[in-house]
Image (cartoon, rainbow, N blue to C red; front, side, top):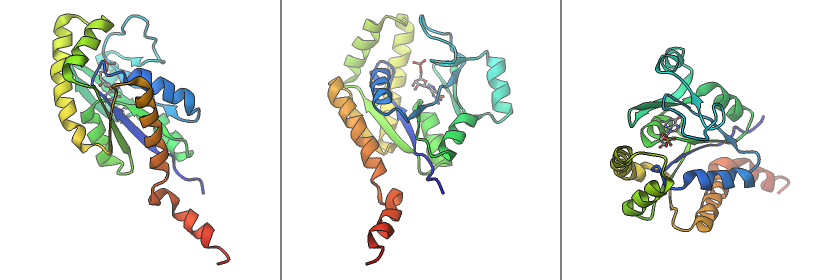
Length: 203
Ligand code: 5GP
């Protein structure tokens, strides 16, 4: 029997650098499957449909929900975001590890539905640093930034419900920490009961 894959759920406030950390992690761990989410928000410059997100109209998104095509979904800053279910379940059944990059309300829903999911929260060094990074990124207007900062504070408060919390202060260290979490999660006793039997064989 193939072991089921692990489901990693990563959350972090916008501008926290999670995209950079995750792209490096995915480069290092070639067999991690990154689940592309669906959203009703407008694409930012340079974002590609099917790569960054599946960009759906509100009607298309609602149809997906009605057809039970979403593993979870949530509203965030006025738009809908959701995890298409089919591929995630397929990969996990095949023993492939999956990463979801989603906000905290969706993450809580996942934890309720799939108890073995591993929740990782990436903290910014501070909220003022977060504001500075969002302004520097320049992809959002001031009002949107203010809204995202407010949302960020609420998200950070929910970090206490996560299994692992790491901080993105120095990028290299953050990547090492993330890698360490992936390794540690593979060494839990739950994942390695068979190893005990193997070692005890012919004792
Ligand atoms: P952004 O608009 O900056 O790309 O994303 C806004 C927020 O939506 C981020 O916190 C991101 O993690 C979250 N998000 C992206 N995809 C999903 C999803 O499939 N489900 C949920 N619940 N949140 C998502």
